[in-house]
Length: 158
Image (cartoon, rainbow, N blue to C red; front, top):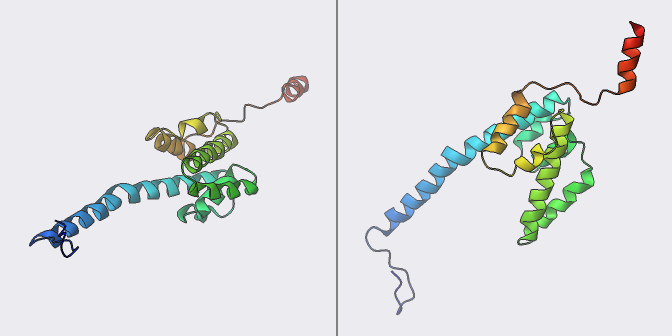
């Protein structure tokens, strides 16, 4: 409780224990939720980088370098990384980051011969984890961009 005369916060006899309990819960939530999600996303991004033969797959484990790795995997222009400076602007920043992530994942999905619109689905919680797993461990379909000219050459050889 706040003391109006002294301006101090009187926590009472159990105040320090309450603060420790809250801190313990925050650390527990981090260890049980956020750390496994970070490990999962790092593993999947590293595997995606290896499957696309992108150098420096280890960057998936380091914050901010993992975004650089996503740009390399998706063959997105590296100048786009400068747009991440917008993250410090309220509202505009979160929209810019969301748009950048959609663009990066769109390009990564297309590079792995998957539909680009999967990048939009990366904004959906839980579904994004499933799609990352499919990109990392799923079968990589053959390129659908086989030209008709190459098909006709194969037929003419027979």
